[in-house]
Amino acid sequence: MPRLTRSARSAASRRHMILCAAATGLVSSAVYAANPDIIGATALHALDPTLTGAGVQVAQPEASLAGGTNLFEVNPTNVGQPASLFTYTDDSGNVTTAFNPAFSSGHADLVGKNYYGAGTGVAQGVSHVDNYNADYFYNTIVTNLTPIADAVVNQSFIFNEDPSTRLTVADQQTTDSTYDAYIYKFGTIFLSAAGNGPPPFGTVNAAATSYNSIGVGDSDGATSVGPTADNGRSKPDITAPGGATSFSTPLVAGSAAILLQAGARGDGGSGTETDATDARTVKALLLNGAVKPAGWTHTTTAPLDAHYGAGVLNILNSYQQLVGGEHHSGSSVATATVGGIHPAVNTGTINSLQGWDAATLTSTRATDTYNNYDFALAAGGGVTSYTLTATLVWERQGATDVGNPINRLDLYLFDATHDVATPIDMSVSAVDNVQQLYTLNLTPGDTYDLEVLKNGGVVGSAGVVSDAEQYSLAYSFTAVPEPGMIGLVSLGGLALLRRRVQKN
Image 1 (cartoon, rainbow, N blue to C red):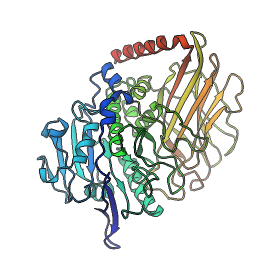
Image 2: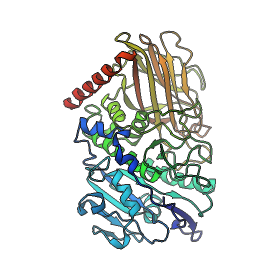
Image 3: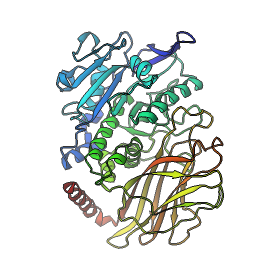
Image 4: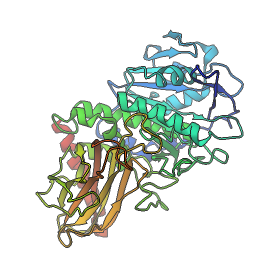
């Protein structure tokens, strides 16, 4: 993986990056190429071959490997795509549509193969690829808040000051703030590699540490792990197979492009196109569809696993949850006081056990506010229990104060049939802008309340950046069948998804 360094030219100049470290060598992406259904891509493409990222414009900033200067360009022939698909921007900002072999990067080719490569990539039908020199991209586009047409940006590089050291915490936070401000302003989806470890790069690296980006680790190869060095946040957000994070990251980026295509054409329901293509919704769906591998764990205050994040990417699961539709909360309630009680409030059940919502909560200086999503879990049919996966995502509102960067939102689950006052599960990290529940052994026949709470208080106090906060929530209640029913339930679920797709 390319490693970049930042240094200051002068007090008046902007931060810049130069090549500083030898890469450990190009790692083959054969892990994915040999079995793309590890991430659900084969099953999804078989279900709907038109889900290719069509209509979505993407970016691929690339950093030079050691020993090269301005080596960033993807060779169209090596990724099986026409030359007309690409625009190239070098380190001086020169733009051309002509591939220059002198700037060719084998690393860029391998990333592109997993991203959009013909016959190999997750999103083989993207409308255009803007291939940037990473120095120019960060210094001129991200830092200066320059808008681009690209909806998804893959960053298979990390930031560091020196080959043998990491960024200081202060520098990491500056990098985070730069990306957070860009993503919040423009809604661009950034996928950034966590780094390949071992020390000094063993802890997840910038820019994967930014709040609003999606930090990607490798599920079965070299990878850096969380928590973050600054305040112990849960990163990476998700993992994928690739042999190294340079090549797992584009698998997630390609999946994001597919979800954007699907959301824009109304697969999440008529009239939901804007909510479905929001960066928060795409992130929530990607994380919530991830599969929990053996050894995955989290706590109520650390929502994601230190190695796997939300789990291993599965684009079929994420798409199924998108197709489950947008379902708004049944009620929005204020507590009596900040930190007051927030019991379950059953105001009617949602009829889909897979789905999502994009909504806004507004608290006050005196009260918390919470939204209630109620679900009645059907009994019978050979179902022994249900497992809930729910993911809540919101954003840092630009480059807010490092000491108080985000509003605090919490996620709770109540068994409203038996006790409306005491949650049976919760995700209440005070530092993350992601909360996740993974709750086993839910009882068929009971009603469950999934609750999103925004902490109130005086703006500027801990956990209160603003009164209002927009969030996206993705959820899936998965039926656990009797052993003899597993194959039948799986086939039935696939048939239902086919019918839904045909209606759109």
